[in-house]
Amino acid sequence: MNTKLTPISELGEFGLIDRLTADIKLQHSCSVVGIGDDAAVLNFANLQTVVTTDLLVEGVHFNLTYVPLKHLGYKAVAVNISDICAMNAIPSQITVSIAVSNRFTVEALEELYQGIKLACETYKVDLIGGDTTSSISGLVISVTALGIQTPEKLSYRSGARENHLICVSGNVGAAYMGLQLLERENKIFASDPAMQPDFTGYEYILERQLKPEARLDIVHLLAELNIVPSAMIDISDGLSSELLHICKRSGTGCLIYENKIPIDEQTASMAKEFELDPLVAAMNGGEDYELLFTVPVSYFEQIKAKPQISIIGRITTAAEGANLSMRDGTIIPFDAQGWNALN
Ligand code: ADP
Ligand code: MG
Image (cartoon, rainbow, N blue to C red; front, side):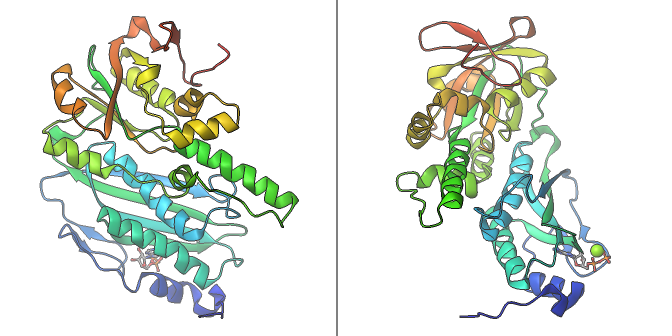
C-alpha cells in the first residue's frame, strides 16, 4: 500500500497535469487532438454541436466530509453529460478545470480523476483538455461537455404542444432523500464520533445522491424507437420546476397525476422517517438527473411498453396553468417553488 502522500508543490503544475492525464486515450474520431497543445482540435463534419458547462464549488455544491473524491469526480462529469442528453444529443468530449488549495495532495487529486475517468468510460467521452490552478481555500471543479446530433433530432425545451404526453425516466425524489439521510448521519457523527452511520436498506437512495447517472440509455432507447421528444429537460432542480421550464418555453400548461409519478420504495420509506410526504421529495427535491420529456400522443403504446419510462400526464393550454391531480381527484395548481403540501 502506498502510504506516502505527495504535496502538489513537489510536482508543480505541469507535473501534476502530466500525472493526472498520462493514461488518457481518445476514442472518438471527431477528437483530432486532445490534451497537450494550446487547444484541442475537433472535427464534427456536418453534425451540430451542443456545449454545456457546470461549476462546482466546495461548501456550496458539495461537502467533502461525506462525499468521496472519486464520487465527486464521477458526479461532476455525469451532471454535464445529463445536460447533453437533455438535448437528445450524444456526448462526445469533456474538458475539466480545477482550482485546488494546498490542503489537497496529488493522491487526493488522482482519486478525483479516477472518478472522472470512470465517467468518461461509462459515457464514452474523451477528456480533451482543461485548466489547473490554485485556490486559497477549497476545491472548485468546472466541467464542460460537448455532444453531437443531427439538427432535426435535437430536443429543445420549447417544442411541447397541447395534448402531448409528459414522460419521465426512472424515478424521482431519491437523490433528495439520499441527501437528507447523509446530512442526518453526518450530524449524528459530528456530535458523537463513536456512532457509526447505518445505511442498511437505503443503499439505493444513497447511490442516487452520491453517484447519479445521466440517462444516456434513454437517449439511445428513444433513437431505437425512432422518437424525437418534442421537448426535453433533465431534472436537476426538481420535477415541478423543470416541468414549468418546459411549459414556459413552450407556451403551454400541464396536468400531471400524483399516482403516476414514479417514486422508489426506499424514497417513500425514508420520507416517512422524516415525516415528509414523498410527493414533496418527488416534486421539489433535485439532483435526480432523470429525463423529463414530451411526445405526441401517437407514441402512447410504444412508450407505455417501456418500463424505464412513466407517462405522468399531458400538456394543456397556458390558460389552464400547471396542475397536479391528486389521488382523491382534487386538482391543485403548482408553481416554480414546487408543490407545497400546506397549500
Ligand atoms: P495553457 O498554459 O495553454 O493554459 P496548460 O499548461 O494549462 O496550457 O495545459 C496544458 C495542457 O493540459 C492543455 O492541453 C490543457 O487542456 C491540459 N490540461 C490542463 N489542466 C488540465 C486538467 N485539470 N485536466 C485535463 N487537462 C488539463
Ligand atoms: Mg492552462
